Length: 61
Image (tube, rainbow, N blue to C red):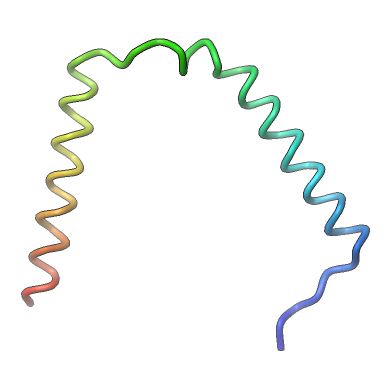
């Protein structure tokens, strides 16, 4: 049986999430506007490639 929440609790949780999202956006908007250095992009692409290869290997076994 799924757990039900009280309407007040649900509204409070949504408000907290919205508040966190707003503070996160204002805090990190300057950082997010900066482009990633090329070395970071290369690292991200390499990690994604490894994840794909690992997932493919898991599918085979």
